[in-house]
Amino acid sequence: MKALIIGAAGFVGAYLIRELAFAGWEVHATCLPNETITEKCGTHVLDIMNKDDISQILDENAPDVVYHLAAQSSVSVSWKKPQLTAEINIIGTINVLEALREAKKKDIRTLLIGSGEEYGYIREGACPLKESEPLNPGNIYAATKACQGMIGEIYAHAYKMDIVMVRAFNHSGPRQSDIFVISDFCKQIAEIEKGIREPVISVGNLTAMRDFTDVRDVVKAYRLLGEKGRSGAVYNVGRGKSVTIQYILDTALSFAKLPIEVKQDPNRMRASDIPIIEPDVSLILDDTGWRAEISMEQTVEDTLNFWREKLMAYGLSLGT
Image: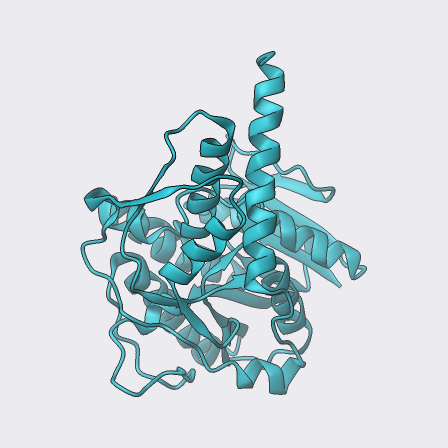
């Protein structure tokens, strides 16, 4: 199998390169001119806003599976930069699909990576959410991902393209940006332990309930969907059990080496927040045999240790 990962310089990309390579795939991956890919694979510079460049890479490499990861993937950033989010997540996806439609190789499977946020404002009693649940996005990022999935379904049906839509729920792990909640909590704790932050952790809404899966499990799901997923189908990818952000915070604090005060920061509150999001993941289990295996506690501990090591290395580089 040969894969092309579009937008591989981000958090998930490095893990997916490793997962596919370990399974024996030949892996090619793209990044923006100002980005780097550290994992061993064929690398290509690409901006998805340029369709001709996408076409050139597709025709030169003729992949069996394309993983479309390139996105503006932060809910908080989408509130601040809605136009940028729409351009990357919608127009960029159309460019990818058009390039695939026109590619010389006609049997390329494409995974469009969407989000559990697409379900949005959920009907009472609807959780756990099946893939057939109507979408009702509650933020800009979710709306663009819902649009991406709809466009993907149109291309799959109208042009008989081999497209699999994925709604990935929250995933986390070592090396994730601190704009995401688990990494944010863990970075703050590591900074407090190192003495570069007061022993106070700043938090936003702690009552929201979310489904969290380790990124190392998520990329395994992506590989299996590339191998076994059904063309034209939509798959939830998640643990299948939501917890409160308070639980995530308590778990992170349980690994801290000293007492830490918790303080709510109004600037960390979103303009709109969905109370609970929890997926039904029986479809991906039935079709591929995949289920989440790494515990949430392990994910939090590994992420905290990553930040501890990063701050230690940074301190050593400064001679402190």
